[in-house]
Amino acid sequence: MPRRNLLVQVVALAALVLFSYCLVRLLLLRYERGDVYPAYSTLRADPLGTRALYEALQSNGFTVRRGYHSLRRELEVKPDSIYYLAMSAGEILTFDKDEVANLDNFVRNGGRVVITFEPEGPIASDAEDSNPFAPKKKKTDAGDSKKDSVDKEKAKEKTPSEKDSDEDASQLETAQEKYERDEFRKEKEADPDWEKDHMDTHYHRSLAALWGFGWDREVQPDKTKSDSGKSSADDADKSLPEVQAYREGRGALDYSVPWKSALYFARLEPDWEVLYKAKDKPVLISRPFGRGEILVATDTYFLSNEGLRNDRRPNLLSFVAGPGGSLLFDEVHLGTEQREGVMSLAEKYRLQGYLYGMACVVVLLLWRNSVPLVPPHPRGNSTLTGAVSGKDSRSGLINLLRRNIPSSDILKVSFAEWKRGITTGQQHLNPKIAAMESILSGKKATQSEEIVSLYRELCAINSPSRNKGNYAAKP
Image: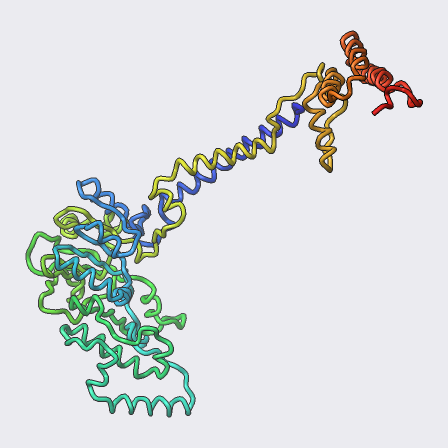
């Protein structure tokens, strides 16, 4: 290989290695900072994340881990506490029946669940209801309006037992459950295409209804329009409020906590204990449930990296951390989920050695196809001509002979093969064989012309003429 081509290949390989290193380093820096993850994730190290809380608990003797799988699978590890940070308020209604039952059993058997809502700003006084059960307004013509009125009249004529036949017929236990059932029924009656548009046509008790708490958002009062013609309430809807939540009663908790959410709790059962209020409305509550405990807050700012840096409340943080043990921070509800694939199965069954072996085989195949493993022949033992790829079996045999038999031995090998084919009935060839052996042992041919000349001498001994009676023509 020319020296110039080898240098180009070495430089290209070095450039490829350097580019790969820089690319991997850039990706690692992005993931170390964590800004590619959702807000309030324990993987984020910027002000919007909660990584500082996660690492602080880990350094203080807690067994902390992140949950990337389904609730049923995570509960198999038997954690002591489960944290749902920055959950959307309406998302707590989306837990299916199995998840509700699993969480309920977890708390009743001594587990601890901490739920904090994602901060939300107030709603304008003229805005539509943000309740997830509220029916959506549709544009209808006169015929549709008449049809809707008929459907509503039929719904009113139903007896209570008929209404509940489509729903969970269990007894209403909490104010939140009654509220959810009423809203569910209103939306169902207002939408004539409910059965077609919704796969789940039956009401099932949500986690909030089971545990007996609800929520609502603060309404932003109307304000006069500014000189620019825009209402200042529009700007207030986009920014989070900055208020103080004050401790209820006396205790070891901090007196006040900065609160940046307009959500507050409503329809609470008597067992709930209000720990903090903002604008005289409960925003942080807790209750014992079975042998466990439930803690719910309408804000997550006081647990974020920014909150821990600027407005740290150590007593409240210690209360949220709980008695210790194994803590599980759920990441699935934030959108970070680990799904099993081929590599996950390989790691689970410890197939790393097999994968490394396959990689080595691929490298060897590439090497074999790019660089010949057979060393070249010495210059003195070069073949008659260069090897030429054939297109049939005869050409392939010729090329094989050229690569494996030196040119100086071609006549000796050919003569040996010819002798092997002589039978006992061809004894008349013995004098010729002796003559050809004496010529081959006495002369040595290395060049092409010498080999051709010696070959002709051997042919002359074997077939001196084709005349009648010549022994070379006898059978």
